[in-house]
Image (tube, rainbow, N blue to C red; front, side, top):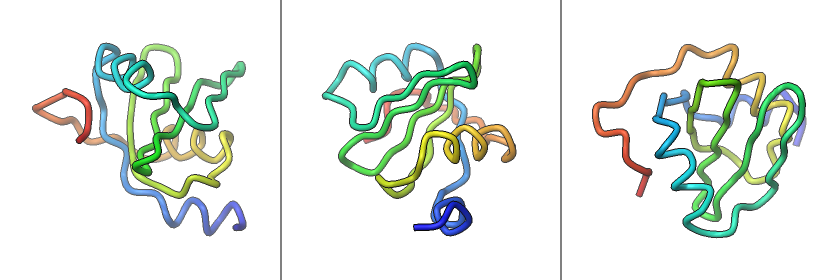
Length: 90
């Protein structure tokens, strides 16, 4: 999958709390957990992608093959929606 197609397959990011982000990270073994100087990302088997950039935590749905750098770029370039219920996505 090309980077452009991977970005097209991503839903809009939703802001979540740091607590919800860590809960998702520790709830089940993440897939493709990456951490570099640009941010941290991981994916779940349900197709949810979680991204942390400094103190900003977001989640969105996408393809399991979406590269880490594309996830970071998507989180930075798309204004995130706020969610009233900030618990982990089910």
